[in-house]
Image (cartoon, rainbow over all chains, first blue to last red; front, top):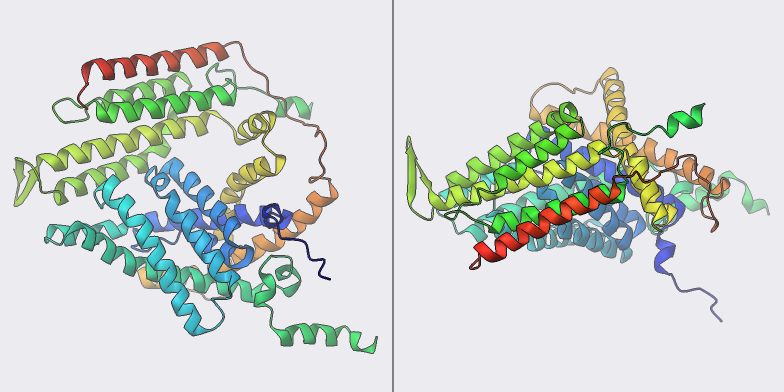
Amino acid sequence: MSTKEKFKMKDNFTMLTLLTIPIAVAVNVVGSQIHRALSLPIYLDTIGTIFTGILCGPWVAAITGLITNCVNGITNPVALAFIPTSVILGLVAGFLAMHDMFGNWRKMIVSLIALALTSTIVSAPISVYMFGGITGNGASIIEATLMTAGVNIWKAVIGTEFIITLLDRSIAVIISFLIIKVIPNRTLVKYRLGMTYIKEEEIEEDYEDENLSDL
Amino acid sequence: MWIDTINERNPNSICALYPKTKIFIVFCSMICIFLLTSMKIDGYAFLLIPFLFVIALLVALSQVSKEFWKLMKPIIYLSVFIFLVQILSIRRGDILAKVWIINIHEEGVRHGLRLCFSILDVAGILLWYFRVTPNKETARAFQDSGMSNKTSYVFISTFKIISELSAKSKVIMNAQRARGVETEGNLIVRMKAFFPTIVPLVLSSLMNAEERALTLDCKGFETECDKTHLFYLEKTKFEKVGYIVPSVVTILLFITKVLLWKNY
Protein backbone atom coordinates (compact mmCIF):
# COMPACT_ATOMS: atom_id res chain seq x y z
CA MET A 1 0.00 0.00 0.00
CA SER A 2 1.34 3.45 -0.89
CA THR A 3 2.19 5.57 2.12
CA LYS A 4 3.14 8.62 0.06
CA GLU A 5 1.68 11.73 1.68
CA LYS A 6 -0.09 14.27 -0.45
CA PHE A 7 2.19 17.18 -1.40
CA LYS A 8 0.82 20.17 0.48
CA MET A 9 1.15 23.83 -0.49
CA LYS A 10 3.40 24.64 2.47
CA ASP A 11 5.79 21.85 1.42
CA ASN A 12 6.62 24.10 -1.52
CA PHE A 13 8.21 26.60 0.83
CA THR A 14 11.16 24.80 2.38
CA MET A 15 13.99 26.73 4.05
CA LEU A 16 16.12 26.52 0.91
CA THR A 17 13.27 27.78 -1.29
CA LEU A 18 12.64 30.68 1.09
CA LEU A 19 16.29 31.65 0.69
CA THR A 20 16.24 31.18 -3.09
CA ILE A 21 13.29 33.56 -3.56
CA PRO A 22 15.24 36.71 -2.50
CA ILE A 23 18.12 35.72 -4.78
CA ALA A 24 15.76 35.28 -7.73
CA VAL A 25 14.08 38.62 -6.93
CA ALA A 26 17.48 40.32 -6.73
CA VAL A 27 18.48 38.87 -10.12
CA ASN A 28 15.22 40.19 -11.59
CA VAL A 29 15.75 43.63 -10.06
CA VAL A 30 19.39 43.83 -11.25
CA GLY A 31 18.19 42.72 -14.70
CA SER A 32 15.53 45.43 -14.85
CA GLN A 33 18.08 48.03 -13.68
CA ILE A 34 20.34 47.01 -16.57
CA HIS A 35 17.31 47.20 -18.88
CA ARG A 36 16.56 50.77 -17.76
CA ALA A 37 20.19 51.89 -17.76
CA LEU A 38 20.94 50.60 -21.26
CA SER A 39 17.43 51.25 -22.67
CA LEU A 40 17.33 47.77 -24.12
CA PRO A 41 14.12 46.60 -25.78
CA ILE A 42 14.30 43.27 -23.90
CA TYR A 43 13.20 43.32 -20.28
CA LEU A 44 15.64 40.90 -18.59
CA ASP A 45 13.50 41.01 -15.46
CA THR A 46 12.09 37.49 -15.57
CA ILE A 47 15.28 35.45 -15.31
CA GLY A 48 14.75 34.80 -11.60
CA THR A 49 11.04 34.03 -12.00
CA ILE A 50 11.64 31.44 -14.71
CA PHE A 51 14.58 29.99 -12.79
CA THR A 52 12.45 29.45 -9.68
CA GLY A 53 9.65 28.07 -11.86
CA ILE A 54 11.97 25.51 -13.40
CA LEU A 55 13.49 24.44 -10.06
CA CYS A 56 10.84 24.99 -7.41
CA GLY A 57 7.48 24.83 -9.13
CA PRO A 58 4.66 27.22 -10.01
CA TRP A 59 3.65 28.70 -6.65
CA VAL A 60 7.18 29.71 -5.62
CA ALA A 61 7.71 31.30 -9.04
CA ALA A 62 4.41 33.18 -8.73
CA ILE A 63 5.51 34.62 -5.36
CA THR A 64 8.90 35.54 -6.86
CA GLY A 65 7.17 37.40 -9.70
CA LEU A 66 4.86 39.19 -7.26
CA ILE A 67 7.70 40.34 -5.00
CA THR A 68 9.83 41.41 -8.01
CA ASN A 69 7.13 43.68 -9.35
CA CYS A 70 6.43 45.11 -5.89
CA VAL A 71 10.13 45.94 -5.38
CA ASN A 72 10.48 47.34 -8.91
CA GLY A 73 7.25 49.25 -8.32
CA ILE A 74 8.89 51.35 -5.61
CA THR A 75 11.12 53.11 -8.13
CA ASN A 76 8.94 52.56 -11.21
CA PRO A 77 5.21 52.47 -10.38
CA VAL A 78 4.47 51.20 -13.90
CA ALA A 79 5.77 47.81 -12.73
CA LEU A 80 2.99 47.59 -10.11
CA ALA A 81 0.42 47.46 -12.90
CA PHE A 82 2.14 44.42 -14.43
CA ILE A 83 2.02 42.22 -11.33
CA PRO A 84 -0.50 39.83 -13.00
CA THR A 85 1.94 39.28 -15.89
CA SER A 86 4.78 38.20 -13.61
CA VAL A 87 2.59 36.02 -11.41
CA ILE A 88 0.98 34.19 -14.35
CA LEU A 89 4.37 33.82 -16.06
CA GLY A 90 5.72 32.16 -12.91
CA LEU A 91 2.73 29.81 -12.74
CA VAL A 92 3.06 28.83 -16.42
CA ALA A 93 6.84 28.29 -16.20
CA GLY A 94 6.35 26.14 -13.09
CA PHE A 95 3.58 24.02 -14.60
CA LEU A 96 5.59 23.50 -17.78
CA ALA A 97 8.59 22.39 -15.71
CA MET A 98 6.41 20.04 -13.63
CA HIS A 99 5.44 18.25 -16.84
CA ASP A 100 9.05 18.17 -18.02
CA MET A 101 8.36 20.48 -20.96
CA PHE A 102 11.97 21.66 -21.09
CA GLY A 103 13.36 18.18 -21.75
CA ASN A 104 14.33 18.21 -25.43
CA TRP A 105 14.60 21.01 -27.99
CA ARG A 106 11.16 20.37 -29.52
CA LYS A 107 9.43 20.67 -26.15
CA MET A 108 11.62 23.68 -25.37
CA ILE A 109 10.36 25.58 -28.44
CA VAL A 110 6.75 24.82 -27.52
CA SER A 111 7.37 26.00 -23.94
CA LEU A 112 9.05 29.23 -25.11
CA ILE A 113 6.13 30.04 -27.40
CA ALA A 114 3.71 29.24 -24.56
CA LEU A 115 5.59 31.56 -22.19
CA ALA A 116 5.77 34.39 -24.73
CA LEU A 117 2.08 34.01 -25.64
CA THR A 118 0.93 34.07 -21.99
CA SER A 119 3.01 37.17 -21.22
CA THR A 120 1.72 38.97 -24.29
CA ILE A 121 -1.93 38.04 -23.70
CA VAL A 122 -1.83 39.19 -20.08
CA SER A 123 0.24 42.35 -20.50
CA ALA A 124 -1.28 43.70 -23.74
CA PRO A 125 -4.67 44.69 -22.21
CA ILE A 126 -2.94 46.27 -19.18
CA SER A 127 -0.59 48.18 -21.48
CA VAL A 128 -3.36 49.41 -23.78
CA TYR A 129 -6.06 50.27 -21.24
CA MET A 130 -3.91 51.80 -18.53
CA PHE A 131 -1.06 53.36 -20.47
CA GLY A 132 -2.32 53.78 -24.04
CA GLY A 133 0.28 51.26 -25.18
CA ILE A 134 3.28 53.27 -23.99
CA THR A 135 4.87 52.16 -20.74
CA GLY A 136 8.18 53.97 -21.01
CA ASN A 137 10.41 51.00 -21.75
CA GLY A 138 12.52 50.41 -24.84
CA ALA A 139 9.74 48.55 -26.65
CA SER A 140 7.57 51.64 -26.35
CA ILE A 141 9.62 53.45 -28.98
CA ILE A 142 8.96 50.69 -31.50
CA GLU A 143 5.27 50.61 -30.58
CA ALA A 144 5.02 54.41 -30.73
CA THR A 145 6.61 54.43 -34.18
CA LEU A 146 4.14 51.83 -35.41
CA MET A 147 1.18 53.70 -33.93
CA THR A 148 2.33 56.99 -35.43
CA ALA A 149 2.58 55.24 -38.79
CA GLY A 150 -1.09 54.40 -38.43
CA VAL A 151 -1.05 50.77 -37.29
CA ASN A 152 -3.95 49.85 -35.00
CA ILE A 153 -2.94 50.12 -31.32
CA TRP A 154 -3.73 46.46 -30.51
CA LYS A 155 -1.76 45.11 -33.47
CA ALA A 156 1.19 47.39 -32.67
CA VAL A 157 1.29 46.39 -29.01
CA ILE A 158 0.66 42.65 -29.42
CA GLY A 159 3.01 42.27 -32.38
CA THR A 160 5.92 44.07 -30.75
CA GLU A 161 5.31 42.50 -27.34
CA PHE A 162 5.25 38.97 -28.69
CA ILE A 163 8.53 39.19 -30.56
CA ILE A 164 10.36 41.00 -27.79
CA THR A 165 8.93 38.71 -25.10
CA LEU A 166 9.91 35.61 -27.11
CA LEU A 167 13.49 36.85 -27.31
CA ASP A 168 13.51 37.84 -23.65
CA ARG A 169 12.09 34.53 -22.36
CA SER A 170 14.52 32.56 -24.54
CA ILE A 171 17.43 34.40 -22.96
CA ALA A 172 15.94 33.83 -19.50
CA VAL A 173 15.48 30.09 -20.11
CA ILE A 174 19.01 29.76 -21.55
CA ILE A 175 20.51 31.52 -18.52
CA SER A 176 18.40 29.37 -16.15
CA PHE A 177 19.62 26.16 -17.76
CA LEU A 178 23.23 27.38 -17.78
CA ILE A 179 22.94 27.94 -14.04
CA ILE A 180 21.24 24.58 -13.38
CA LYS A 181 23.99 22.84 -15.34
CA VAL A 182 26.66 24.13 -12.95
CA ILE A 183 24.76 23.64 -9.68
CA PRO A 184 26.16 20.52 -7.97
CA ASN A 185 23.76 17.55 -7.76
CA ARG A 186 23.73 17.55 -3.96
CA THR A 187 22.09 21.01 -4.00
CA LEU A 188 19.84 20.29 -6.99
CA VAL A 189 18.31 17.32 -5.19
CA LYS A 190 17.02 19.56 -2.39
CA TYR A 191 14.70 21.41 -4.77
CA ARG A 192 11.24 20.11 -5.62
CA LEU A 193 11.88 19.66 -9.35
CA GLY A 194 15.64 19.24 -9.08
CA MET A 195 15.64 15.50 -9.86
CA THR A 196 14.38 16.21 -13.40
CA TYR A 197 17.68 17.84 -14.24
CA ILE A 198 20.00 15.17 -12.87
CA LYS A 199 20.94 12.62 -15.48
CA GLU A 200 20.86 8.87 -14.69
CA GLU A 201 24.52 8.44 -15.71
CA GLU A 202 25.60 11.10 -13.21
CA ILE A 203 23.85 9.28 -10.33
CA GLU A 204 25.58 6.05 -11.28
CA GLU A 205 28.92 7.87 -11.53
CA ASP A 206 28.45 9.28 -8.03
CA TYR A 207 27.71 5.82 -6.68
CA GLU A 208 30.75 4.36 -8.42
CA ASP A 209 32.97 7.09 -6.99
CA GLU A 210 31.90 6.21 -3.46
CA ASN A 211 32.38 2.45 -4.04
CA LEU A 212 28.89 1.71 -2.81
CA SER A 213 28.73 -1.18 -5.24
CA ASP A 214 30.90 -3.05 -2.73
CA LEU A 215 28.09 -3.03 -0.17
CA MET B 1 26.20 49.18 24.66
CA TRP B 2 25.70 47.59 21.23
CA ILE B 3 22.07 46.73 21.91
CA ASP B 4 21.38 50.44 22.55
CA THR B 5 22.91 51.40 19.21
CA ILE B 6 20.57 48.99 17.42
CA ASN B 7 17.57 50.39 19.27
CA GLU B 8 18.32 54.06 18.52
CA ARG B 9 15.27 55.82 17.12
CA ASN B 10 15.23 58.68 14.66
CA PRO B 11 14.81 62.05 16.49
CA ASN B 12 12.45 63.40 13.80
CA SER B 13 8.88 62.72 15.01
CA ILE B 14 7.53 61.77 11.56
CA CYS B 15 10.33 59.28 10.98
CA ALA B 16 9.83 57.82 14.45
CA LEU B 17 6.17 56.96 13.82
CA TYR B 18 5.19 53.30 14.02
CA PRO B 19 5.42 51.68 10.54
CA LYS B 20 1.70 50.83 10.53
CA THR B 21 0.86 54.53 10.81
CA LYS B 22 3.20 55.35 7.94
CA ILE B 23 1.66 52.59 5.82
CA PHE B 24 -1.75 54.11 6.63
CA ILE B 25 -0.47 57.50 5.38
CA VAL B 26 0.73 55.84 2.13
CA PHE B 27 -2.63 54.07 1.77
CA CYS B 28 -4.61 57.30 2.21
CA SER B 29 -2.30 59.03 -0.29
CA MET B 30 -3.00 56.31 -2.87
CA ILE B 31 -6.75 56.85 -2.40
CA CYS B 32 -6.26 60.62 -2.74
CA ILE B 33 -4.22 60.18 -5.93
CA PHE B 34 -6.93 57.93 -7.33
CA LEU B 35 -9.61 60.51 -6.48
CA LEU B 36 -7.55 63.37 -7.91
CA THR B 37 -7.12 61.62 -11.29
CA SER B 38 -10.89 61.78 -11.72
CA MET B 39 -11.28 65.38 -10.47
CA LYS B 40 -10.55 67.04 -13.78
CA ILE B 41 -10.53 70.76 -14.48
CA ASP B 42 -11.55 71.32 -18.08
CA GLY B 43 -10.65 67.70 -18.84
CA TYR B 44 -7.12 67.97 -17.43
CA ALA B 45 -6.11 66.28 -14.15
CA PHE B 46 -4.30 69.41 -12.92
CA LEU B 47 -5.00 68.66 -9.25
CA LEU B 48 -2.29 65.99 -9.23
CA ILE B 49 0.34 68.73 -9.39
CA PRO B 50 -0.43 70.36 -5.99
CA PHE B 51 -0.43 66.86 -4.48
CA LEU B 52 3.20 66.54 -5.57
CA PHE B 53 3.92 69.70 -3.54
CA VAL B 54 2.18 68.14 -0.53
CA ILE B 55 4.47 65.10 -0.84
CA ALA B 56 7.50 67.40 -1.17
CA LEU B 57 6.39 69.19 2.02
CA LEU B 58 6.08 65.85 3.83
CA VAL B 59 9.57 64.89 2.67
CA ALA B 60 10.98 68.23 3.87
CA LEU B 61 9.31 67.82 7.29
CA SER B 62 10.82 64.32 7.57
CA GLN B 63 14.28 65.77 6.80
CA VAL B 64 15.08 63.22 4.07
CA SER B 65 15.05 65.66 1.13
CA LYS B 66 18.58 65.09 -0.19
CA GLU B 67 18.36 61.29 -0.61
CA PHE B 68 14.73 61.51 -1.71
CA TRP B 69 15.37 63.86 -4.64
CA LYS B 70 18.46 61.89 -5.67
CA LEU B 71 16.25 58.79 -6.06
CA MET B 72 13.40 60.77 -7.66
CA LYS B 73 15.60 62.07 -10.48
CA PRO B 74 15.43 58.91 -12.66
CA ILE B 75 11.68 58.74 -12.05
CA ILE B 76 11.29 62.34 -13.18
CA TYR B 77 13.18 61.51 -16.39
CA LEU B 78 10.96 58.46 -16.89
CA SER B 79 7.76 60.51 -16.42
CA VAL B 80 8.97 63.20 -18.83
CA PHE B 81 9.76 60.48 -21.39
CA ILE B 82 6.30 58.93 -20.98
CA PHE B 83 4.69 62.38 -21.29
CA LEU B 84 6.58 63.16 -24.51
CA VAL B 85 5.77 59.79 -26.07
CA GLN B 86 2.09 60.15 -25.16
CA ILE B 87 1.92 63.61 -26.76
CA LEU B 88 3.64 62.43 -29.90
CA SER B 89 1.67 59.24 -30.43
CA ILE B 90 -1.93 60.07 -29.45
CA ARG B 91 -3.75 61.73 -32.30
CA ARG B 92 -7.27 62.44 -31.09
CA GLY B 93 -8.87 65.75 -30.19
CA ASP B 94 -8.13 69.30 -31.29
CA ILE B 95 -4.65 70.37 -32.20
CA LEU B 96 -3.26 72.49 -29.38
CA ALA B 97 0.11 73.41 -30.82
CA LYS B 98 2.35 72.69 -33.72
CA VAL B 99 6.06 72.11 -33.06
CA TRP B 100 8.03 71.88 -36.35
CA ILE B 101 6.17 69.16 -38.25
CA ILE B 102 4.64 67.52 -35.18
CA ASN B 103 1.07 68.23 -34.10
CA ILE B 104 0.30 68.14 -30.38
CA HIS B 105 -3.25 66.97 -29.78
CA GLU B 106 -5.46 67.69 -26.79
CA GLU B 107 -6.05 64.02 -25.89
CA GLY B 108 -2.30 63.41 -25.87
CA VAL B 109 -1.67 66.24 -23.43
CA ARG B 110 -4.59 65.11 -21.20
CA HIS B 111 -3.48 61.50 -21.13
CA GLY B 112 0.19 62.39 -20.75
CA LEU B 113 -0.44 64.81 -17.90
CA ARG B 114 -2.57 62.32 -16.00
CA LEU B 115 -0.07 59.49 -16.45
CA CYS B 116 3.06 61.55 -15.80
CA PHE B 117 1.88 63.11 -12.55
CA SER B 118 0.19 60.01 -11.18
CA ILE B 119 3.47 58.11 -11.65
CA LEU B 120 5.37 60.94 -9.92
CA ASP B 121 2.89 61.03 -7.02
CA VAL B 122 2.77 57.24 -6.46
CA ALA B 123 6.55 56.89 -6.75
CA GLY B 124 7.02 59.92 -4.48
CA ILE B 125 4.92 58.60 -1.62
CA LEU B 126 6.41 55.09 -1.85
CA LEU B 127 9.94 56.47 -1.92
CA TRP B 128 9.09 58.65 1.10
CA TYR B 129 7.97 55.56 3.01
CA PHE B 130 11.12 53.60 2.21
CA ARG B 131 13.36 56.57 3.05
CA VAL B 132 11.84 57.14 6.50
CA THR B 133 11.43 53.49 7.54
CA PRO B 134 14.42 51.17 7.89
CA ASN B 135 13.54 47.65 6.70
CA LYS B 136 14.06 46.11 10.13
CA GLU B 137 11.30 48.36 11.56
CA THR B 138 8.85 47.30 8.84
CA ALA B 139 9.69 43.63 9.33
CA ARG B 140 9.32 43.93 13.12
CA ALA B 141 5.96 45.70 12.76
CA PHE B 142 4.70 42.93 10.45
CA GLN B 143 5.87 40.27 12.88
CA ASP B 144 4.16 41.99 15.81
CA SER B 145 0.91 42.05 13.87
CA GLY B 146 1.06 38.31 13.35
CA MET B 147 2.91 37.68 10.08
CA SER B 148 5.02 34.51 10.22
CA ASN B 149 8.73 34.99 10.82
CA LYS B 150 9.47 33.23 7.51
CA THR B 151 7.60 35.87 5.49
CA SER B 152 9.27 38.75 7.31
CA TYR B 153 12.64 37.04 6.78
CA VAL B 154 11.99 36.85 3.03
CA PHE B 155 11.05 40.54 3.12
CA ILE B 156 14.23 41.74 4.91
CA SER B 157 16.60 39.45 3.06
CA THR B 158 15.22 40.53 -0.35
CA PHE B 159 16.29 44.12 0.19
CA LYS B 160 19.64 43.14 1.70
CA ILE B 161 20.44 40.68 -1.08
CA ILE B 162 19.65 43.20 -3.82
CA SER B 163 22.38 45.57 -2.62
CA GLU B 164 24.75 42.64 -1.93
CA LEU B 165 24.20 41.23 -5.41
CA SER B 166 24.82 44.59 -7.11
CA ALA B 167 28.14 44.92 -5.26
CA LYS B 168 29.04 41.27 -6.01
CA SER B 169 28.27 41.72 -9.71
CA LYS B 170 30.91 44.46 -9.92
CA VAL B 171 33.49 42.18 -8.26
CA ILE B 172 32.62 39.31 -10.63
CA MET B 173 32.79 41.61 -13.65
CA ASN B 174 36.28 42.72 -12.61
CA ALA B 175 37.33 39.10 -12.16
CA GLN B 176 35.98 38.15 -15.59
CA ARG B 177 37.69 41.16 -17.11
CA ALA B 178 40.98 39.94 -15.63
CA ARG B 179 40.29 36.56 -17.28
CA GLY B 180 39.89 38.22 -20.67
CA VAL B 181 36.14 38.86 -21.05
CA GLU B 182 35.51 42.14 -22.88
CA THR B 183 33.21 44.35 -20.82
CA GLU B 184 33.67 47.69 -22.51
CA GLY B 185 32.68 48.58 -26.00
CA ASN B 186 29.53 48.66 -28.01
CA LEU B 187 26.18 47.23 -26.99
CA ILE B 188 26.78 43.74 -28.43
CA VAL B 189 30.06 43.39 -26.53
CA ARG B 190 28.44 44.47 -23.27
CA MET B 191 25.54 42.10 -23.80
CA LYS B 192 27.94 39.21 -24.37
CA ALA B 193 29.58 40.09 -21.05
CA PHE B 194 26.21 39.67 -19.31
CA PHE B 195 26.23 35.83 -19.40
CA PRO B 196 29.66 35.22 -17.79
CA THR B 197 28.71 37.70 -15.07
CA ILE B 198 25.28 36.45 -14.11
CA VAL B 199 25.99 32.70 -13.97
CA PRO B 200 28.77 32.88 -11.32
CA LEU B 201 26.73 35.54 -9.50
CA VAL B 202 23.65 33.37 -9.11
CA LEU B 203 25.68 30.23 -8.45
CA SER B 204 27.71 31.76 -5.59
CA SER B 205 24.52 33.20 -4.07
CA LEU B 206 22.77 29.82 -4.24
CA MET B 207 25.69 28.02 -2.56
CA ASN B 208 25.58 30.69 0.12
CA ALA B 209 21.82 30.15 0.45
CA GLU B 210 22.30 26.42 1.04
CA GLU B 211 24.70 27.08 3.93
CA ARG B 212 22.42 29.76 5.31
CA ALA B 213 19.49 27.32 5.28
CA LEU B 214 21.51 24.87 7.39
CA THR B 215 22.54 27.66 9.79
CA LEU B 216 18.96 28.84 10.25
CA ASP B 217 17.80 25.26 10.84
CA CYS B 218 20.46 24.91 13.55
CA LYS B 219 19.31 28.14 15.18
CA GLY B 220 15.75 26.87 15.45
CA PHE B 221 14.25 29.22 12.88
CA GLU B 222 11.38 26.89 12.01
CA THR B 223 10.36 25.96 15.55
CA GLU B 224 6.91 27.18 16.56
CA CYS B 225 7.57 29.13 19.74
CA ASP B 226 7.88 32.71 20.98
CA LYS B 227 10.98 34.33 19.58
CA THR B 228 13.19 36.80 21.43
CA HIS B 229 14.13 40.03 19.68
CA LEU B 230 17.15 42.31 19.85
CA PHE B 231 15.28 45.22 18.31
CA TYR B 232 12.35 46.81 20.16
CA LEU B 233 9.74 48.95 18.45
CA GLU B 234 7.51 51.22 20.51
CA LYS B 235 4.66 53.48 19.50
CA THR B 236 5.24 57.22 19.89
CA LYS B 237 2.71 59.73 21.22
CA PHE B 238 1.99 61.09 17.73
CA GLU B 239 0.35 57.92 16.40
CA LYS B 240 -3.16 59.36 16.78
CA VAL B 241 -2.15 62.46 14.80
CA GLY B 242 -0.66 60.17 12.15
CA TYR B 243 -4.02 58.40 11.77
CA ILE B 244 -6.38 61.39 12.08
CA VAL B 245 -4.73 63.87 9.68
CA PRO B 246 -4.63 61.61 6.56
CA SER B 247 -8.17 60.28 7.27
CA VAL B 248 -9.59 63.80 7.53
CA VAL B 249 -7.83 64.93 4.35
CA THR B 250 -9.03 61.87 2.41
CA ILE B 251 -12.62 62.19 3.61
CA LEU B 252 -12.68 65.94 2.79
CA LEU B 253 -11.32 65.17 -0.68
CA PHE B 254 -13.94 62.49 -1.20
CA ILE B 255 -16.76 64.83 -0.13
CA THR B 256 -15.39 67.57 -2.44
CA LYS B 257 -15.34 65.12 -5.31
CA VAL B 258 -18.88 63.91 -4.69
CA LEU B 259 -20.24 67.46 -4.37
CA LEU B 260 -18.35 69.24 -7.13
CA TRP B 261 -17.57 66.51 -9.65
CA LYS B 262 -20.86 64.65 -9.65
CA ASN B 263 -20.72 63.67 -13.28
CA TYR B 264 -17.36 61.90 -13.35
